[in-house]
Amino acid sequence: MVFKAAIIGCGNIAGGYDKKVPDSWSFTHAGAYHLCPDTALIAVADTSPEALKIFSDKWKVNKLYEDYREMLGTEEINIVSLCLPTEKHFEAFKYACEKDIPAIFCEKPLSYDLKEAKEMVKLSNKRVVSVNYFRRWNPSLDQLRKEIINGVYGNIVNITVRYTKGIYVNSSHLLDLIRWFLGEPEKIQLIKIYDNNKDDPGVDYVVTFKNRITSYFLHVPDVEYVFIDIDILTSKGRIVIGQRGQKIEKYNRILEPYYTKFDIIKRIEDFETQWRDCFTFTVKEIVECLKKGGQTSCTPEDGLRTLELCNEIISQIK
Image: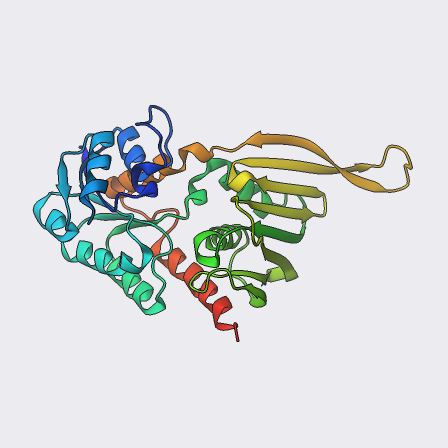
């Protein structure tokens, strides 16, 4: 069976980030549906006729709608991607559920509104839903997570996260990732707010996990580039997740070769992760859930929890 997919919203994450129709990996929803042999992208909706034409010319989708309600009410759809602005997620999500769409691939965050996000979780019952904190579908990061849990690198001493842009756009990705690695936080505290964007501010904050593991999230202000990295110090060395999750560096503790009286850490490995395949793996997982049941790697409950943590930080702003 080929599952029929549709996309609401024709922006970068929907199909724009892929410079051309991909033949091996993709950064977009459209590209992932194109690469997955079990899916076919049959329709797309956007309020902009110009955006629809650009999308159609590139991805060869002929069923175009300026109203997603008309699309969902007309087409037979198995999977719908929500790639419209965050403040419009709830209504589109709710309508997709009303039309009994079996699977929803929703961009993050679920919503800016906690009440809406909680309602979206309720609506997700008996439905396959993935929230696109896409690093959860990076096998290299999943392997690292399992190694950390199993104590391969010893005890975690502390974690430092640095990010550009706002808490919802970028920092939420990293908060979700660290929570995925370490479990539920025990305490979260605002340190500093930057006023570059009142709707999605950059903030410094600290999160404490069990065993008193501390993770510092530090905003990088006033730069014209995107920067995201995670620096994990352990009792046996160091792990750096760099280039927005595209690269991992590992350091081991060794005897300092000159003084020979103390240990230092030395880089022993660095490699590119499987970051290019995240979107394709997500769609393949959705298909498997539709066929066999089960939960996705990032559920609506995960999306809600990340939003709750972000909102808790914002609530501390005076």
